Image (cartoon, rainbow, N blue to C red):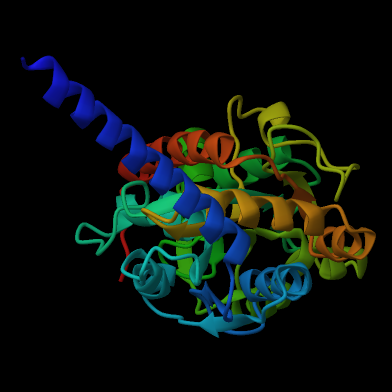
Length: 328
C-alpha cells in the first residue's frame, strides 16, 4: 500500500527538479534583461577601477546590456564589498574584488560585515599584479642581500612607506620585515600618490608597490628596483629576481583582481559571466592594456578561483597574525 504514494512523491520530486533545471536554463538564456551593476569598492582612477571599466565595457557588448561601474569606496574596500554581499543573488549586482577585500580583510577587521567565502560566489580570477620592492637611490643596495645588510646595520633607522595601514603594500612589507627579522619603521600614507612622492623625495627609504606605479620612476633613475614578490620571475620586469630567490625562501605576495557574485546566484548566470569575461581576457587590446597595468592574466573557472581564494586567505591571515598588523 505505501508504494503508490512513494512513487507519486518520487514523480513529483522529479518533476520539481525538471522544472528547476528548466527555469535555470531559461534564466541563463534571458539574463540579463536590464543593466548589470559592477561594484568597485575603491575610488575612481585606481587600478581596480581601471580593470573593472575595461572588462565591464567588453562584456557589456556581448551581454547586450550596459555594465554600470558603481564606485563604493570606504573602509579598505569592505564597504563596497558588503553592498554586494547583501545584494539580491540575481546576477544584476557583482563585485570587482581584490586580495584586500577577500584575503586580507578577514584577518584585519574583527567585525567584518561579510564572510568572503560564505557570502560570495567566485566567478573568475582576472589576474595578478606584479609587486616591486624598490628603494630610494640614497640606499646603497643593488639587491635584496645588500639591503638586508644595510637595514640590519641601522636598526630602527630605515623607514618604509605604504598606501595605508592594512593595505597590500603595508602587509607585504610587514611580511618581509618579519621573515628577515628587521627593525624598520612604517610610515602609512593615504594612497599610492603621496607615498610615491615621498619615496622619490627620499623621505622614506623602502616600499613595496605595483609595477605600474613604480616602473616609470625606476626607468627615470629616481628609484632602484631590487626584486619582485612573485613566486617566479615576472614577465612585467623579467630582469628582476624574486625576493624568494634573493635570500628569503618561500616569500611570495600577490595583488589580485577577481569577479564575485552574491552567494546563491544561479549557476547558469555564473557560468555565463565566466564565459563572457574569459572571452574578454583573450582580446588583444584587453591583454595589451592589462599588461600595461603590470598585470598577468589568470582566467579559469569558478572552482579553481575558489580554491585560490582559500589558499590566499590562509596565507594572509598568518602574515597578519605573525606581524601583528592592525588597521587605524
